[in-house]
Length: 308
Image (cartoon, rainbow, N blue to C red; front, side, top):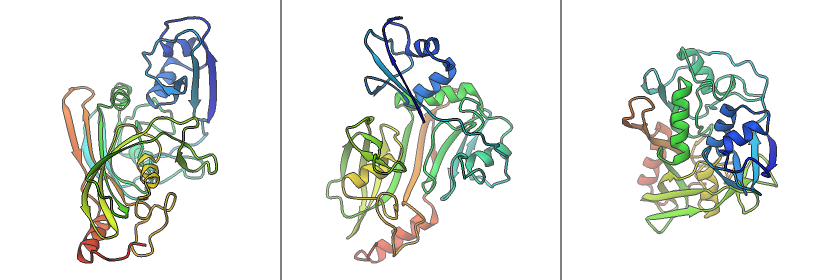
């Protein structure tokens, strides 16, 4: 990922997307996409495209590197929760990567969408057509893709403005005593392991996760999470931070020797958004997968059962 920097010395009060388009080789559309993805910062804080630059502002921009990949359509079954000419909402299965990357060019949600859909938005390029947000490979549940650039911009703005509501459920290790809480802790790339994220004050972005206890067991807690921000691995990192890592999370905890989890037990159960064309509120629900239900049933049958 390339990192670009500017110090504002002229063009004061210009919108930041116009300023960067004038002072870089990036197109304004590309800049707006980077802004909506939370990759443009002023004084280390993410800003909106409408932000007007001020004298002395230090602007940073993280630009993902282009990967030369040929993305092919693949006939992969999709669990479609909703579809129209603007958007498609999928219940993503466990083990499916959202978009291709180096070393992982097939079997992704994008490969499946290219086969299923006639059109997808092109804002994120050939590697991520239609993709406006992501969920991790081993996280299941609701994800929306956009079929045109108008819809992409509308949903991206809802995500940036926090009007798109995402609800997750998961099982964490240990018993959380309070019913509700907020984890407000900034997240950045782990300096010791670039494949991981970590709670840190260094070059970090704010991250806020709301949680609610659904059910307690002797050695685990069934939780509901709502994201106020959308950082990479946010729920997983925040749960590790409060010493309650997600069950089965090999990256931020450890693999369960008791349950076959195939990674973290985390499910994007609900998605609420405003339709980009009709402007009507929409609510989508994905039932928790069978493996998740089986773990809950086992914990309920034997409340004292081991989980590691």
